[in-house]
Amino acid sequence: MTHFEVRQYDAAGRLGELTVPRAGVTVQTPTILPVVNPHVQTVAPATLESEFGAEILITNSYILHGSEDLREPVLERGLHDLLDFSGAIMTDSGSFQLAEYGDIDVTTEEILEFQHDIGSDIGTPVDIPTPPDVDRERATEELATTQERLARAAEVDTGEMLVTAPVQGATYPDLRERAAEHAAATGLDVFPLGAVVPLMNEYRYADLVDVVAACKRGLGEVGPVHLFGAGHPMMFALAAALGCDLFDSAAYALYARDDRYLTVRGTELLDELSQFPCHCPVCTEHTPADLEAMADDRREELLARHNLHVTYGEIRTVRQAIRSGNLLELVDSRARGHPTMLDGYRALLDHAEQLERTDPVSKDAFFYTSAEAARRPEVRRHHERLARLPVEGDDVLLTEGSSSNQYDESWGVLPPFGPYPRELADTYPLTAETPDRTDRAAHEAAATGVARLVDLHPDVSFTLLHDDWPVTALDRVPDRVRVRDLHANE
Image 1: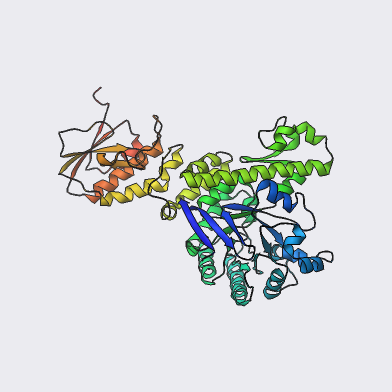
Image 2: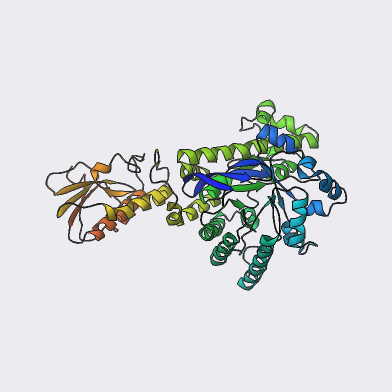
């Protein structure tokens, strides 16, 4: 995939550059594609570009294809001129309308040719968006239809226009993984994960994580991954940590129409706010009462602008977190905004082995900010690398305290990582910042590390000096280890 290059990873999150040859632009990822309705533009595309730095947007080619007012003008003038936007433009195919109304009057070949003719930079075939929780037979049949259409899409001459390969499969991880493998093999360019909006609408973030993780297993590290319909900033960090690069959002406009105000923690109703908890131009120049007193169109526009400021602000925050190596700390923080986001974070950590494959082996710092941090990829990696660390002598002390000459060797112990040779104390992640009041999860993870080291060296005698570990942690320590509390004789 010569048009997409990954510059940096954190967990499965990645900073990338998507070269869009037809537009002659390079898009920095992760990023958001604002959804622009060609008939109703709450915020003009030119404004998206000039004021918010939008490098790419998405609009619906099926609406344009069927529009009596816009079909001929867009064919004559081209999409960029019609929308007054010089960045990259992606077009959807009508699959959303297919999901909503059950039928559309266009084929994959026809809509791709139309997208090419109007100057789209990234086109989309007509896939079948199978909703969550349908029976397996339907999901399998509709997936087969999608894959047939992707095969036909790969044969259409689209010139420099990139073409997407949507990944379907409902909520069946094995179907999603298989679909992703097929999509990656098509030679197409961008990989949208489809039919996930119902999961987000129902706050089923744990299920969403499992779906995305399955898709990523099948895709590997090819091309940019587009999470269709992921427009709320509260979930950008979580989705990015899974390896999603592109998000599209009509939320900024739809929420504004309903007097809904976006934050990174959720959504507020305008009439329930007495002050704005934001420093964007809209919120510093106006009060909630000011907006409520305005005409509907003006209020809607200003709310949409605020929603865009929050959206792009969170995208920048996510990018910087990847660059700094603290994306999972950001996910941890955002997960505290809603119980179902916490479910999503915990589900993310169920896939720690998958995240670890691209997670850098060294970063600036590891902050232990919650019990969930005990399950991060860095902890798993440390436990795995114990197999490569030699143990010297037959009688070894593992301690949270000082070393002792009474043993052949003395290792340190640091929750949540567990045992480590003291010469590694100043290396990542053992330089972790941890609270003085260590929780049960950190102790249990450290005990798991002790158990792994002991199992790797069946002929070595081990003694563990711990600092008031709970019973649940001590139960994980093998019986043949001599265990003492550091403060037992105080």
